[in-house]
Image 1: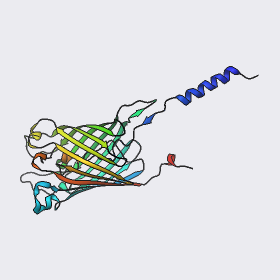
Image 2 (image 1 turned 90 degrees about the vertical axis):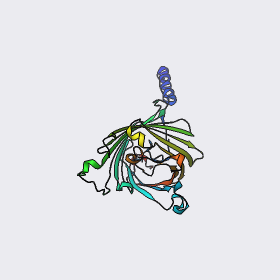
Image 3 (image 1 turned 60 degrees about the horizontal axis):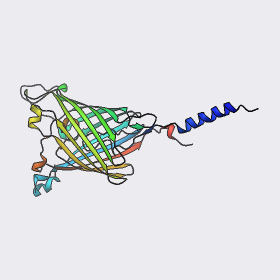
Image 4 (image 1 turned 180 degrees about the vertical axis):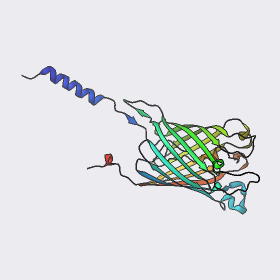
Length: 286
């Protein structure tokens, strides 16, 4: 005889497993690991090396003689690597201040629905930059520690739907040395960013960093940038307009002085290319 009750119980279990809501994670909240100047919650995949170039021309209001800024150029070259699904590191070198920077990004939460419901993706981002430009300073011995600037951010993003994504970036910057005793060593800012997807491979982006009131905020301007992202296979090409020539946090958050209202607008672009260094065996198909 067949155990009818056992068969029924087995069938119920199968149905429960079949209908159990699976966890689905948000992906491609932003096209690239950078929005314009700021970092996004995106990270290189595990075992993937990303080569990143940031390029800025001069200010548009510099006039026809300077070809509206195109005669000038600054650049940052960087490498980013995905150590794991939740951790990546990167290094870079900028022409401005001949600065070197290094960072890590750690994914704390990932937006998901289904069995596991998490409304936001949260990433901890921390970076340090060193200014290696040779600047003569009288009556003062410039030491290595004086050239360091630290920035820590909490990147909180939500993909609202297939078209819109938002991100906020509470930021803390510490300068070991400031040019005047009236200025702060510790600075706080709130960054916001948005992305609007136009087609499968094209999107509009925007980011804005507001410094908290204080002596530094009184003599600088908030960094505002608008972008246009184009994805072409392994490349992400980003065109943008910004009022900040600096491309690292130590430069554009506390030191932007350009005003959009006066035409202090800089045209630039970011381009990145990824290379798989270590293949993830779990993703191989046999």
